[in-house]
Every structure is written in structure tokens, then in C-alpha cells.
Length: 259
Image 1: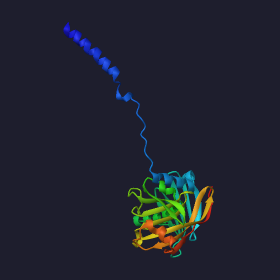
Image 2: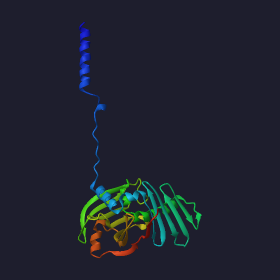
Image 3: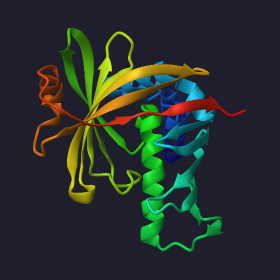
Image 4: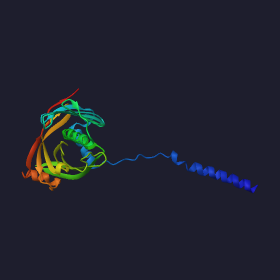
């Protein structure tokens, strides 16, 4: 009889404990918030100032150094196109998507090896990348670091350093960029980059001739050559002192939106 009473008391105690401690699965979990870095906030604000959501579904064409370029975006999907002449005078037509690159020379489709595919792809992608800055700076492969504020000709700028992950960063993933974003307009007024292809080098660019076409901001750049080894962060100081040598002009002309 004592064994039965003890067993009954054990059951009652077990039920009491179970009611006092509901299973974990019934607990309401609190949302985990991911902190957005200051660099990400500034880049996002700059993207909005230059065109924002319009970049996600855009279709434009322009001419650059006498050749025709076209870009079409639909969120993550894209289509870039080039029509022009190579240095030998042959007509070249390049079509690049996220899946493949196709090239026609004098209307005949070329069979490309991997090195050639990479070359045509990089050349086309580079022009579109600069023409649509800062749109691609929001990609997952972009590492952004806030470098503080500075002044250039008495205007305040937010300074962002950009590098790239090897996964998704393209063939030039080891390049390094600096962007000087106007603290008032959030537009990119200056940029600098260090590259390693074709022997490497450093460039500093100054934006001019801004134009807005159907909501997207485009601008040209004066391109300055810089001595290799110069710290990118110091280039605005050298520019203010008139110590940089102009190399070329980066001009996107005849910009139109395609319906």
C-alpha cells in the first residue's frame, strides 16, 4: 500500500513540475536584429541619391568613346551589350548576361576560350560598372569600411574604403577603392582605385557634368594618373595642391532610356 501511495505522489509531483515548466518550443523567440554598419548606411544613402530602386529595373544605352553600350537590369538578372569597333577596325558585338558571354566579329559568332570570355566580359562589365556607380556597391561581394570624414575644397565628405571578396568579386577582386561621398548630396564626387592588371596602377577621378535621365544620376569623370605606391587616402590632398596629372576623360554621352 505504501508503494502505491508513493507512486501516486510521484505522478502528482511530475504533473505539477510539467505545468510549471512548459516545453521550450512554446516559448516566444525574440527577433535577432543585424546591425547595419555606418559604411553600409552611407553607401545605401548614396545609391538612393544616384537612382535607388530605379537601378533594379533599368534599361538604358549610351555612347562611350564612339562605341554603343546598353544595360538592362531586372533585380539580380542583367544584360549588358557592346557594339563598336576594335583597334583593327573590325565590328564587335558583345552580349553579356549573368550566365554567359557571346561575341560576334563582323557579324560572325566567335568560339571563345575561357581567357577570351573573361577578357570580353571584363571590358564590358568595367564600363557599365563605372557608368552606374554606386549601384553595384550594394552587392554581397563588396567589403565596405568607414574611414571617417574629410574636407575637400571646404566641402565635407564621408570616406568609404571598398575591397572585394574573392567569391563573387570578379577577376579584379584584389583591387582597392576609395569613395568620397558628399555629406550634403550623398553623391560620389571623387573616387580612387588601385588595380593590378596590365602592370597595375592608381587612378583618381573627379566627377563633373552631372545629368539625371529618367530618375537615374549619371556623371562624367576627369581621370588622373597617380604614381604607384601613393596612398589612396591622400589623393584629395594632392588634387587640391594641383599635383596630379590628367590622363583622360571618362564621358558617357547620348544617354537615353529604352522603353
